[in-house]
Image (cartoon, rainbow, N blue to C red; front, side, top):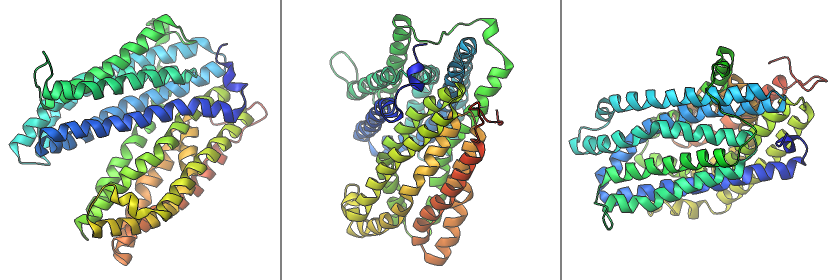
Length: 451
């Protein structure tokens, strides 16, 4: 089969070739987010506020559709590795249909709740109106998002990372180009304001989807999407959700964490809230290549596990861990050597920059060890062990850090919140490695007794 390179090529080169396209895609996507916010901010400060208030619901849509698509990715790769072509086809076919239903439900539900949701955070009628004008258009493309990420994970499942990169880059590039055209008007295109930003985003997603479909038709892959009755089975759907639900929760947890920590830090000073926001902006760029490695690793783990290559799964895990550690070590050095310069990129207030520099020196103590948690969580998703992956994320984003930040802040002030991060990372890393070792007791056949 064409994808057998996933169990034959040397692990380091294979993992690098699978991860690099995802790293590039995620970096461009991050650039798009910055550019999109830049153009919306040019409309008015209230437009930017409206966009910020809509973001949590947009994030929920992404979490649900991408999380389920991760389930598709793991099941398809596993079945291909096991040589079960029909089951791989069924997972792709059923996954496409179910995620489309998710998109329809999310469109209707999100548009319906937005007036009340926006009213919870602002009494400014103009901000509410701008938020509704944006969200009513943006959320109408939820089905396109669901289908696009489904195709993305299907192509990744068979090792076609370059295709995924091309389609994602095309959508982001189109979005960046169309933003000023639709927002401010150019040539025959009238000025649409904040609605133009939503339309540009939606059309970028449609372009990505169109390219996926076109490539699927012109250059067939080892997975066939066929809407036949035999491809729709309850057992397959349960497997998709068993991985997809925890993956979706994994993606949603950081937003809850930030809101909780903002509440703790606000008791001391609003400047600490800003420092936390800047930290997450900086952290995003550090974890982009890290998440790219996880995306490249996940189908390799699934495929080799399905093929009974237990020892190769362990080698992929160790290699990904080493690559991740190099990235995190570099991030640690930067935060120790030039923390003031990093904070200065986002604030001109000297006192805030000083507080932020002190925070970065503390926070970076958890970077390197976090490699264990991030890689273990992604690898467990690849093995179909979504609940185990979710347990690691719950420790990192909820169970340990929130009560830890609260208690340490009472003893050490705002500095206690920063110390809670590295303490949480060290404890979670130990738990994650234990979970990984326990759940991957591969036997002679390369399989575990867990599945």
